[in-house]
Image 1 (cartoon, helix red, strand yellow):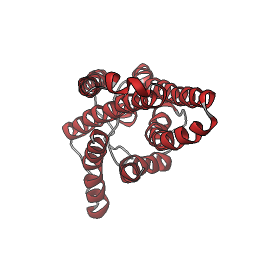
Image 2 (image 1 turned 30 degrees about the vertical axis):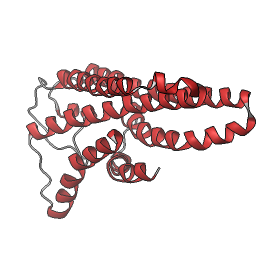
Image 3 (image 1 turned 120 degrees about the vertical axis):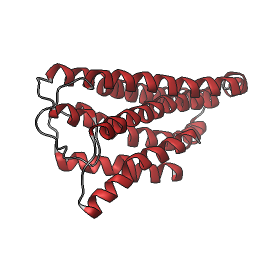
Image 4 (image 1 turned 45 degrees about the horizontal axis):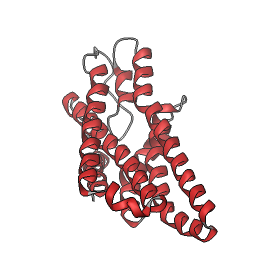
Length: 223
């Protein structure tokens, strides 16, 4: 339910403005509006990242420790994980914006994208932003990539554990985990590409925006 809520909020935050800009041609957003959009994007994106990690923990306990599931994944633990997801994402978003809100902006004011995000926002600053870009990459890119690989490794560990017990159980575990792995790839793929790819391309970035905020939220409930 929380994952669906986050997907809904992400789409609501970007898609109406995107459609309005394309329909009217009035493609303008205020500085304050751009900052707010970036802040909310990172709060929601960070929350989804932590929730996906919590889902991996849930699947591990359900498949590898079924007799301990009710004790480990108690309602109190679920509430704690949910609370932790929002707190961590809030800290992440504040840390990201703390890097950029005081940058001097005195020249270009156009972002060739469907929404505001830090990699494009800092390019408008009237100062050298190389170090700033590296910090943003480290904060978002490396964390996203590291979390993605940890999740994939955890799923592989689950499958290997099940395979050692029973080859029949492997197919059942794979069918259970396939949906989660698909959600993880759809979420982390665009994030890693946007923050880690050294050769940004406007058409690719716009495609990833459509994938991230329109296609993925539609597919997640079906997955």
